[in-house]
Image (cartoon, rainbow, N blue to C red; front, side, top):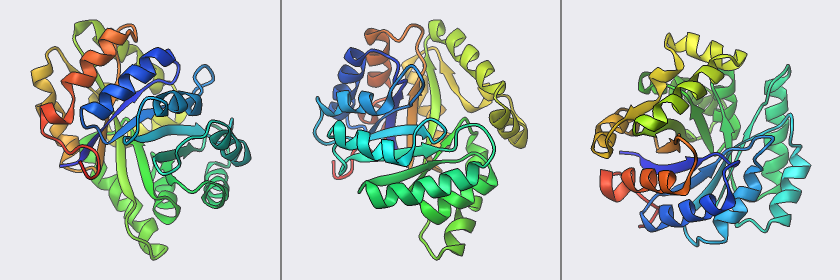
Length: 270
């Protein structure tokens, strides 16, 4: 059974970030994750999370290398005094041509500049192989449990060719709890289906985006819903989708999906 992480959008208020991160640490999650968007600085959000936690790993998934240079990432990690012993530094290609070369160069530069766990976001076969070659871990996104096996095969091809062990496998799994959150999940799924890279990803799996997410009305349904991912991954990240990103909604999901509640692994050494 995989460990459990919890993820939020970096654009939510830092009040929510801090409260959720503290609750995740108290409830035994292994990692607290945020994304990074033009309206939500992922590293700043992690700094807010770090200010109220001591043990939980802190992940950013991911910094697009079309907006962030490796030099700026390293500088920002130092400016914010992020705890590198807890940091999972996730990078992605961003949109546009040259994705593989951009990620390869970025990963090599960051490996030399920031002494932390390096995570590469990957959807298709070539990026999975590159992650197998270079990364400490891979972050999957919007994928079915069945596709974990195929993605792991590609990852293993890259690792074997480089003479490396298989990187750890993490995945964001969108989770909406309660009917009020369902429409928000449907909107997010439709938005991702419009992105060319994700459209190709869903076509490769033969599913619509919603088939890779969880929508349950009651907390008691979460354990069964998460199990297909958790039996295959090293860490399953409950990527929260709530109706309004209010603190009460987020904390309700943190508590409902807590490892102690659902029987999944928590923090390393806990």
